[in-house]
Image 1 (cartoon, rainbow, N blue to C red):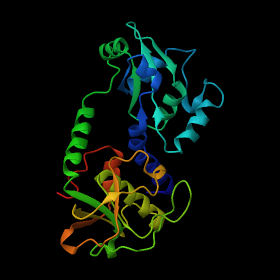
Image 2: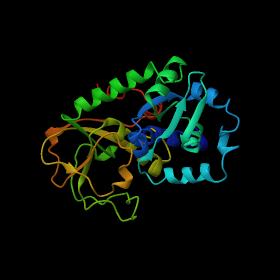
Image 3: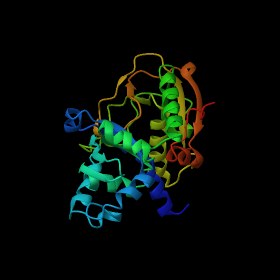
Image 4: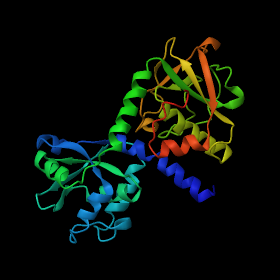
Length: 282
């Protein structure tokens, strides 16, 4: 895999995090709208018919600067107001707000995008086949399955040669997203959700080894015992997380370390494809 392909894979790993940050705008709540997932390819074909409104690749034909400003906004890691979409019985697509937002996420490769719709627009979208279906239910089922397991296990990311023992007071390799201060005060960190652990392991492998699947980075599954608390060191860096990030000061007993597996390139690819990762430790 060349450097461009690796950089593309890193970008793709962020897509689920962006998806999870999209929320219903306050104005849409007042108008009794709800979030629905559109099938991006089908929706875009309908939107492209609206020549006066359509925002093309990289913001073409859009309002100057808006596409680029949303690209910069995404880097902040904060919640994203969903685009507000209207669809009539003839299949005509309109945006009350957010067509440039939609275009950026479309161009990033998001196959489904949450948007705000009224009940009537949702009904027409369903009739016209513009909503995401099939595989989405499998994705949600997979997420539910992982959440169910979260009370029993946590996931810690570390160097492979250190996976057999997890000790506190180790110097962090990372800085906080906002302040750039060294992360934490020597605590041990863990993730509730396996997706977050794989995402962090991929980031760590690329940062220190310039590879996905070098064998140098491992994910450790821990039994959830002892006093874990929510990690509040870097809330900005946790935007879009699939579960809680936790920390503790005391050591992790060896009997709580159930299994450790090195990150592989296949795990990274599967996460990028939004596959169910709950079988990683099967």
